[in-house]
Image (cartoon, rainbow, N blue to C red; front, side, top):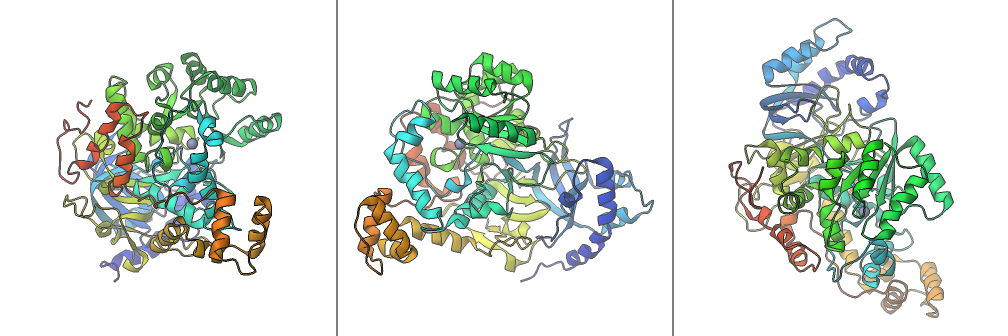
Length: 596
Ligand SMILES: [Zn+2]
């Protein structure tokens, strides 16, 4: 089935007439930016010039919110945005117009108008994740850890459930599913309204080319790159490499993830190595002191807060009230699925509960939204490009249901079911079938299992679809069904499947390491069982592929509430998912209690 209104296709031709004008205008206004960033090489979406109307939360300097706003997206760029459609035409008329003609007004008038029936925000920027682990369910954590070194290096359960399993799944000489694993992380991000994602490992196949969401380490958004690190300062050579990375871009590093002197010392070591500066984007900071936060603020270093992961593992989180009072610029991100929220939308609810019950409501709803839009954009040096809806910015947008009057509270309370559309580079990639069908051919779209089975709320019953492929890249075509199917099959660890997937040469190598003799000439199920046991300490139980959306994952809440480290108030988290999100609510309603 094709998109109903064929006139949309005509506009592509009209749109390309404008490319030279827009490029000239962009370079005029942003002389340091590369032209290649502005005009994508090959459009991934059918509709390249569109006027979106709805409530617009701009996150601009004045924090304008326009209930009947309008914005024009053309070839991946927000050309103009205004309080209503009439004002949009005036705004376009006032744009720099080196050609001195009326073409841009004509192109605006030719652009298709889509009323989104929702609230338009800048795309959410996730400054801390590990997308390759998004396939795993929440870990059944049984004890409190002091810091991340305790569980990462000395915990057998973690090694078997995560480290060993991930090696088996992703290494080319084992099951070779790195592309599928990475892609699944991107699906989960999209479902949670994320448009930029940190933590993609460059050595995994999916991260070599940008496909669905932006990878902050490689996306050509700004001239400065980003370098992400899990471990820091293991030797002098590593500190030196970090200084070199700092000279070229942002350093996004785990810092003081845990409590105790060892964590506070990480900060001091980093400072001694000359790395405390405006390029530092520190993740976690659980063990940082007030003095250290002041030092960070004084040099413009940033902090990424991941409260759920911190509480589940360590029973506490960073002292956000002190960091905020010190003037540290804060971002909020989910960390990863094994000990955190599925996406930014989930982590916003955790932050809301912490704010209400532990911070005395210090953070306003607006600040929470800033922590997932404008603040991470600034932390990455992306101001002028992302994090705000303004002329000349890249068209990364998320649109959610208009459920409560306060537009900031509206995003804090929105669940995955409320996400109506996710647009990246001007391409509609994911959202409600009805809305996506206005942008893409039905044949390009695939239904995703996001709504709750048997739940009759308006939002939950809407069909969500994804455009799973990236024709502008050399990456193979993969459907969600194929990807998820392969991953779930692999997670079952059936010896007969494993025997077929791994070469005799690899069997022989591993058997030698294990002292397990020789495999059969054609490896058998029994050989596979021996390999799994001796090389990976597997299997111990079946791992279920983590569902994309929180509401579709009943095990998530069961595991969450039995965690021994969680403060009791965080056990109210399921309450955010049980209300009828599709119905219009008043500003004062909150699953968590009072709101600001
Ligand atoms: Zn992490």
